[in-house]
View (cartoon, rainbow, N blue to C red):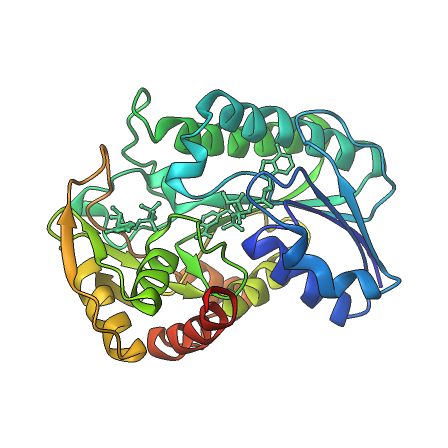
Length: 313
Ligand code: NAD
Ligand code: UDP
C-alpha cells in the first residue's frame, strides 16, 4: 500500500485512475482545481476513508507527504486548453515543476502524463509514431500551448532526473475515451456520442478522412499503473494507446450504428493544425511492461454510450 497523489484526479482519466488505485488498497490524495474536472466524477470515492480531495491549482506548490505522484493536471481537450492558453502553458510548465520539486523533496516517484501531441502533425515517414520520433510541432499555433507545454514538461522531467536524480516515468498517452468524460468536453468521441444520443447533427471537422487511434480508459489506467510500478531506470517516454486506427467518418458511422441514432452527419471547417493521422507504435510498452490494450473500439464505445445515456438522458 502506498500513499499516492493524483493531480487532475477529478478529471476523466484521473478519476478512473483514483478509483483503481483505491481498489488496489492505496491511500489516494486527489488534487484538482476543477477547471475541467468535477466532484461528480469522484463522488463515489468520498465514502472511502483512504480517499482525500484537495482543491488545489498545481501552478502553486503543494506540500504533502506521498510515495508516488501521478501528474495529470492539465486540460486535454482542444477547446478547453485553448480557452486560456497562457494558463495551459503555466499548468504544464509550472505545475510539472512543482510536482517534480515535490518528488525531489519526498524522494518519491513521479509519472508525468505526456501526450501523442508531442509528435504534432506527424509526417508519413513516421507513421505509426515511435518514441524516437521528435515530432512535427508548430511552435506558434493555437495548439502550441498544449503541445509545447507538454514537450517542455517532458524536458523538465528528464532534467530533474539528470540534475537531481528524481525517479521519473513519462507516458505518452494517445486519444483515450470512456466513462467520466465530460459531456461538454469537446473531444470527438464524447461529442459524437452525445450528439447521437440527443439526435443532433454529428459534427465532423474537415472531410473526416483524418485518423486517430482510440484507447479505452480501463486499458490506459492498467498501462499507467504498470509503468509507475516498472523497474527503476525505465523512464520512458513510453507510448500508450490502442493501435486500431480509424477515420473520423468511420467513427461517426460506428457511433450512429451503435446508438441506433437518426442523427445526420454534417461537415464543419477543420481547426488549424489538426493532425492528419495518428497511431501509436506500442512495441516498447509490450516489451517493457507486457502491456497492450484489450478492449476493441466497438466494445469500448458500447460501454461509453451506456455511461452517456445515464448522464445525458
Ligand atoms: P480532463 O480535462 O478530463 O482532466 C484534467 C484534469 O486536470 C481536470 O480535472 C482539471 O480540472 C485538472 N486541472 C487542469 N488544470 C489544473 C491546474 N492548473 N491545477 C490543478 N488541476 C488542474 O482531461 P483527461 O483526458 O483526463 O487528461 C488527463 C491528463 O492526460 C492530462 O494531463 C492530459 O494532457 C493527458 N492526456 C490525455 C489524453 C486523452 O486522450 N484523454 C491524451 C493525451 C494526454
Ligand atoms: N473532431 C470532429 N468533430 C468533433 C470534434 C473533433 O471531427 O466534434 C475531429 C478533430 O478535428 C480531430 C479529431 O476529431 O481531427 C480528434 O479530435 P479530438 O479533439 O478528440 O482530439 P485531438 O485532435 O486532440 O486528437
